[in-house]
Image 1 (spheres, rainbow, N blue to C red):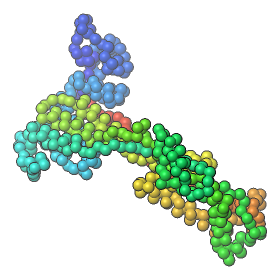
Image 2: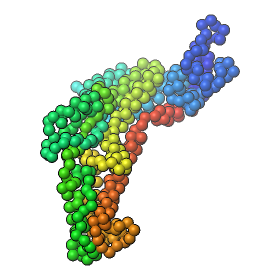
Image 3: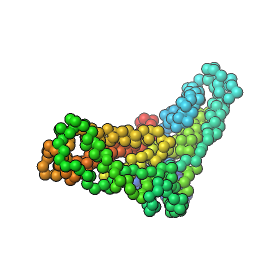
Length: 445
C-alpha cells in the first residue's frame, strides 16, 4: 500500500477530547489547505504522501513523512542510500570522480540485502586494500567517517564574485598618464562601491567616436577607384576614425570592480560547502543502515542545502562575465558607446570571446569598404541610392556611419549571444525541489 499519514498520527494518536489534544501544528494547517478541515476529512482517513508531494511540495511531504504508515524502515534506508548515489555529484566534483563513496554505498546495499558481512583489511589511508567481500555495519561507518574527514579538510577559500563595469575619467589634460591626484580622487569616491582597476586604463578611438564629416577630395568614382586601389575607401575611413579630432580628448576608459557582498567576501567556497553537506548526508544514510534506524528527513534536507549551494556556486562562476556582456549590450543598444574589452584578463574564455568579436569587426570593416554594392547603397545623400560615385564629405560621412552602424550591430549581436548563453547556463543551474521530488516520487507509489 502507498505510504500515508493520518490526522490521528499527526496528533500523536490523541483523541480530540483529550485535554492534551492540540491541532495547532503548522504542518496540520498545511495538510488542511489540501484536504480541508480535518474534522470533515476524517481523523483516520489516509493522506497519501504522493498526493502531499504533488499538491504541497517536497518539503511538506518530507516533514510529515516521519509519521507515515506502511513505509518500513528498510524502504527508508534504501531511499537514503539511493539519494546519496543520485546526488553525490557535488562531492565527486571535488574529488575528481572518486568511487570511494560509491563503494561504501555498495556495502550498505549488501547489508540491506542481509548478506553475511565480512570484515575487510584497510590500507594506511583507511581504504579497502582490495575487493575482499562485504563489510560490517561498523566498518561501513568507519569508511564513511574517513571520507567525511577528508571532505571536511578541503580548503574552503573565501569566494569573491565580482561585477566588472567601465566608466570614463576626465582629468582635464592632454597627457597619456592620469595624474596620481586623479587616481586618489577616484579611489576615494569608489570606497564602499567598488575598486578602480588602474591597469585597465586605456583610450579607445572607436568607443570615443567624435568625428564630424571627413575631408573629401571631390567626386570619387566607386568602381574605377576600387579597381585601381581596393583599399581606397577603407584607408579614408581609418583616417577619419583615427584623426586628431577623434584622438584629442581628455578622457580615459577605466574598469572598476564591484563585489557581490558589502564586505567583498563570502566566507566559504560553495562547491566545498556542497560536498561537505553531501558527505554529512551520506554519513547519516550509512548509519541508518548500520544502526537500523530512520533519518530520511535529515538526509534529504542536508542534500537540499548542499544542492542549493552547489547550483548557487555554478551560477556565480559566470556572473561577472554575464554582467559585462549585459552592460555592453545595454549601452550600445541605447546608443551609449561602451568598451569592447574584457576587464578580467584571467578569464581566458572571456578574453577569447572579446578577441573574437574584435577580429570579426576588423574583418567586417575591410569587407564592407571593399564592397562596391555596399558603398553604392550607403555612400549617398540619403535620397539617391544607389550611386556610382561618392561626391562630397556628406556622402562619405553617410558611408562611414553605415560602416560604423554595421560594426556596432555585430558587437550587439555577438554580445547578446554570449550573454544569453550565460543566462541560459545560469537558468539550468537554478535549484528547484523538482529534482528531489522526481527522485522520491517512485517510492511513494
